[in-house]
Length: 243
Length: 242
Image (tube, rainbow over all chains, first blue to last red; front, top):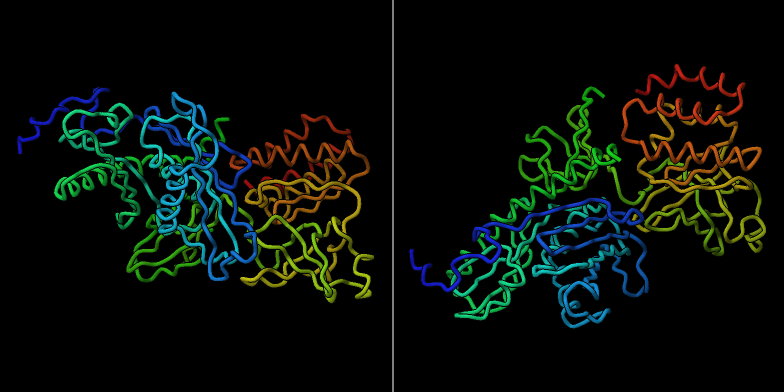
């Protein structure tokens, strides 16, 4: 078990423990005109999510008479990273929108709202790796805030393998690690009650044993995130009084 | 009303355990546990568990009074937008006077506002009626929009809050459960004061002893002297609101 010492990555660049997440900041109702909204920040990664609806879905031929439809729109702001990002849909943002949509669809229940759509807009004003998981965390809070029926909550985390070391909540510098086996990024989303996996992606190489270990680490980290998500929602009234 | 504790729950949270509890609105059961399906405040009366939402879009219920605008006219009625998920349908038969079916626009035209009662809620949409007293077409005054989840605070217990505002400003007020409030007074100034008071209530909706606060706020606005005395009279009723 002491084989981990062989790894080239023995200490994290920001001094965190291998299973330690970055400092988190959560805010509710950042977009007052939306039905629900939230801001989620881990370290230097920040995501804003706004929920609109349920509202009638147009065009009509795309409506589903059995259930409402969820639409997720993910995008990075042009200034979110060092080099300007061209605004508008890209291959990457379309993919993330789609996987986020699938992950969130597994926890929400729109059967009471036929022929409608719920729009979730996720924007990243500042990125330092792990944007899709930050976006999912913000979106889950925003959906609950918007009063959308949900079977359970959702929290997400990215676990990484830097050379041979498994680390939780990787940042951009770790993601760019090139020596040895390089870096592997595993974003995952865990539901709050059943602890089911709602999203699991893998970018890089990893052995099956290591992957199982990574999921275990991710589930543990998600507990801490869930705690904060619950806390911000429960304190909705306290905040109003402080203003 | 035996339990005054207002517990906020989030989706997926276990509210109570036990087979004897009955899951109501926005709640589901899984084995022994009764689980929240929506973000809101828990209400347990007897063994009936339900969640009262504190945010989100307005969802109509039978008997609600709503204020909306005509957005479409069909061959036998009007479609009314009230800020909900779907539009409401007002059939010609539910209008308190004879309307020529070929000239529906003569009675209610596009963009005109109405106060209506929710008659039937189906998954396909809702039917509304204006055949009772107090319902009908709106003319004059202004309509303001507020968060529909704060409407109970504007109305107050048995209408105490609305009565308080009405007496203080001498304005006609109708609160729609969909978060639309119609204000009609003698002058624009009176209407603007009423709007200000309602916005004050919405901002401070979560505070305890809201009625007293609103009463104090109305006094700070320095309305006419004779009006103030009437406001003090209604104060006693309001205090029960707590």
